[in-house]
Structures are given as C-alpha cells and as structure tokens.
Image (cartoon, rainbow, N blue to C red; front, top):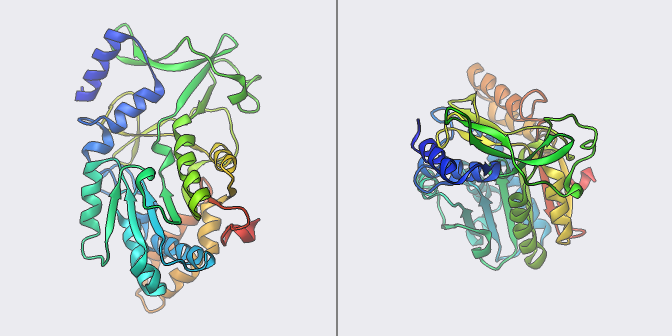
Length: 362
C-alpha cells in the first residue's frame, strides 16, 4: 500500500467518504506524497509522453504561433510569454530557441515565465533550460505574472486539474465519492450531495442509472484568471489538451502508470490521474470575461501551422531512419487515430484580435 493510500484509508475511516475532486487533488498535489510534487512523470522513463516530448516540431510550431501573435499585436516591447503547467520545460526551451531565430527582438525583450506549483518540476524545468540564453522566471499563479500584455500557452494543463463527478442513482444525480468497502479498500460511492440541473449536459435526463457527469469549477476558475488578465492587458492564450467540444455524459477519469492504464483507486500518489476536458465550459468562461474563443483539433492546428512543411525541411537531407522517425512523429501529433482528433486547441483573445490560424478557421 502506498503511503498516500494508507493516509486516505485513515482519513476516510475517521471522517467518511471524500468527493472525487478532493481525492484527485490529494493524489496529484499532496505536498509529501502527491504525484506531481514527488516525481518527474514525463517521457519514456515516466508514465506518459506529452507532445513536446514526442517531437521538437511541436514546440517549434508553437514558437511560430507566438511570433505571429506578437506581430499582430503591433510588436510591443514589453510582453510576457508564459507557459502554465510547463512539464519538463521542453516546450518552453523549443519555443525560446525558435523565437531566437525568427523573432530575435521578441526573444531579447520578452519576459519568459513558467507557472508551476510543483517545486520538483520547477527544478526539472530549470535543468532543461540550462544553456538556453535569456532569463526565465517561475511563478506559482497567473496572478503574480508581470502586468504586461501576455501570450500564454497551456499544454495538457486542464486534464490534470481536479474535477467533480456526479452519478445518477434512483433517477437523481448524487456526487460521486471515494469511500471504503467492508475490507477497508477504496471504492466509489454515491454521496448525498446533488447538482444544479443547470450544469447537466444535454441527454442527462434520459441517461440510465449509473451514468456519470463531470464538471470542474477549478478548471473554469483557472481559465477565468487567465482570461481576466488577457481582457485587461491584451494578448492571447492557446490551450491544447484532450477532451470534448461539447458537454456530454460519461466517466473519463483515468489513471496512467508506466504508460499503461491503471485502476484509478489502486495506486494513489503513484499514478497520474486525469480526465477529459470540457472545452465548451472553458470557452464559456473566457467569453464571460469578454474574450473571443475559437476551437479546432490539434491535428488541424499543427497542419495549418506548417507541420508537414517543417518535417519536410528536417528530413530533406536526412537518412532513411530520420525520415521514418519524422513521419512517425507527424502521425503521432496530428494523425486522427493518435493525438490529432482527440486533442483540441482552444484560442482565446480580445474581440476582433483572434490570431491565425484560428481567425481563418472562423
């Protein structure tokens, strides 16, 4: 039994079942035993691989996008380029390297900031960025970022923000809890709390008992903080994650351990816990803060940004093994059976300032 699982069993035994959101928060961010506070989970040696670790092309194209946004803003000298939830720092490193080549003025003058709550990951990011010219600053929240126009990136950020689950039981919706069974093992239970019908997705009324609905006030609050800054100071945000374009009924909570799916309740603090992102809820929050929003698949975004052309240039004088690797990376990032369709790209910007390629998509 993991140390955190033992703590959870004791806690629930003493105080009763806890909501799924509290369970997720403890598993991921507990100061002593939380998944993200105690380990580097990324890459082949970790539990999952994110797009920046798949290929340098991902970060390079994000860098091109940032440069385009900056140019459309009128090339302000004072601007913040931030990444929230920066993983190992690979995306930031590839973005900065790209900007040094295509927009040296921006690379020299911008404030580069990483928004990270995990000291362990912040240390990993600093190591990754060693040798990358320029200054990088770390912040725990968006609220402390410099008061300049902001271009902010979030890649696989929202899927790891805790969410609440509600289960349909006896025709009504009750909050899903984590409790103990007769053998003191963790199990899911239906709690007493309900949900405001206004938050239920279409089709919820006709869903059978046992169906699950997910909502995440913490995710919308994070988007609200970001959108508020952009509305006040200018800029744009780009958020790439896996999820659905419209609210839906379904249980998407999952655990990953060593690149394989795991029982959600089996290894608290030792496995990654995530769920699919409701992009409609994020877009609604940004729109409520006065911003325009645009959504497309990750595959469409990367292809419109020149993924195939970049792969072609990298492979022009390469050997067959390198070309095969590049083809595999393109398929992994943009293929409909890989990350291309399930993963979405959401852009938020001030009214009338939607950047390419989202502007063209509208």
